[in-house]
Length: 166
Image (cartoon, rainbow, N blue to C red; front, side):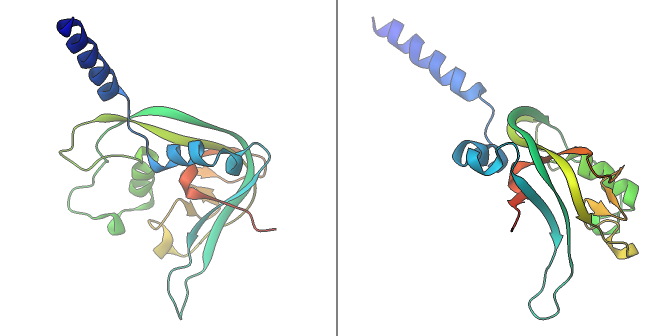
């Protein structure tokens, strides 16, 4: 009987160890599902740093079409030898942004659960200054490597979005 109990405990622990951990974006979908229900207006923002001389805020706004938790295999972040992220060209930055979330070099690959929200784009404001080319996903009328258009659909992690202010 003890042997059977030990086997059951071992199997339960093994099954638990195989479950992919939740990223903050996935936790948000479980804790506050009403926040990202279909039809909800959401906004992704970049910039706005500083207290006195505040940087401009750039944004992408749209309507939630769907929200789900997906398991994704996280690999190492792409790196450009001899450069840190602030020195990346736009193409190098886009490669990094498309791989995100990713892991530091030397960290073993693993599965994680990510909360993904599909958004229909309705409005945006993007930076055009060259210094912004590696500062975020929004740049010169594009979201990463895709030209922004009204009605296009994009996917973002849930924790990157906020509710629109009416």
